[in-house]
Length: 268
Length: 242
Image (cartoon, rainbow over all chains, first blue to last red; front, side, top):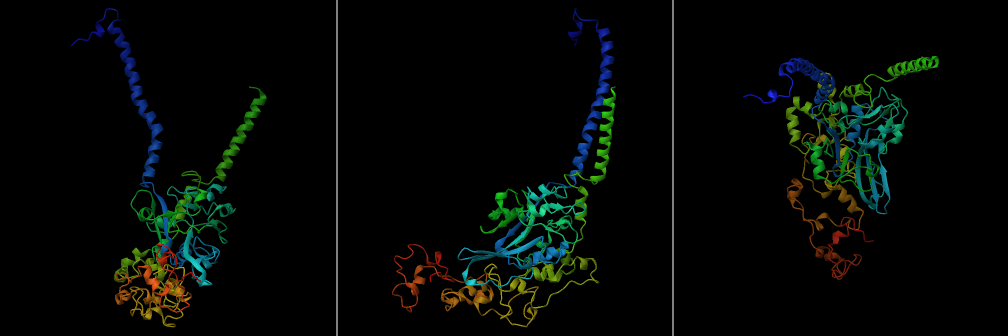
């Protein structure tokens, strides 16, 4: 079949036009066919490389902990195990996690105590007859999504990892103590030996080895459980589905990732 | 180029070089690689050694005892709760032996009576409960059962018993109100005790004109408390009325 476009009377000689245009066209085409992928490579390769590195972590996960107040027997094994696992000094002022006892009296008085974090047990309640409610509340760093301690650290020694754990870089911490002041949960403490701020790490070194935090491992009544926040099947997801959940001090908008079931309204 | 511009240029160049040099020295390696922190810190935190090996590690060698425990009332109690951190033992089983607490003070950390513990959790009074005898004499910690079926309700229901003991109902035995079959003592969860189900039960003592001693408060059952059941307002183990 003949094309009409090259046979029109008003057009230039097809031979001349093709000779020039074809060379130019081929040259340009060659440049383009090499240049575009090269240019794309220069732009894209680091990006692709970065994606592959992230791919090692498999999928995004955000760690969290669930605590059922009705199961806690106040044995203090969590506080003891945490001290052993994380080399926390024995003095009764330093805790990554501790157990508080709440006693609410019939006259509305609220007593909270935590002798040695609950490690050695709790003395009997005075005037037990006037007790309205009493229960134990295990506490630890809430690994806030909007962590005040991360905000105030002047050097970036406190940080949030990709999986939501709030950690301290002990080699880089300058020991100013701002984070200890900033934490609304009192979960941070100043290490008298290392002279750095310290806190619960969700036992990040255990998570890296596929184990649960030490406090969860030793909890004899499964009052504590560990898992991931989100849609994937795990113990925490089930806990969050089947319990009425509260967090501590929700009005501060710190978005804690330690979730309490059956928490009393008086708990601060 | 005008001289002043050249000088200014040199000054800026020197400042820029100083800034870069100072920044190079002060900002640690890997800072900013993953966020506003030293990415290498995560590696050093992850490298922290384990102390607690985890119950899976124990099960690998101690299968029979792990199976026994996991079929018992202590199925949720991990080995290292009692035996302490055992990662060193896992690394060198012959050289390091984990502790095995036999002293009487250990078990009451969980099982000593404490009013704040959840109701129904088995608790004893360490002073009154077979003093001086180590717990293991009668109870196997890997499969704990009461060696004899408890004779008294307070062996398990210490919280309620202690509350009742200081109340106006102190003299009433549990069985006055609760119908507890003998099987409940041996298999507490399979056979449950009964509870009163009507106002008339309380009315047996507290109705006006009931056949009860004069110091027991009486109310007109027809008008008192409307349609509520007695225990919706009064706690029978510690009745509030003075």
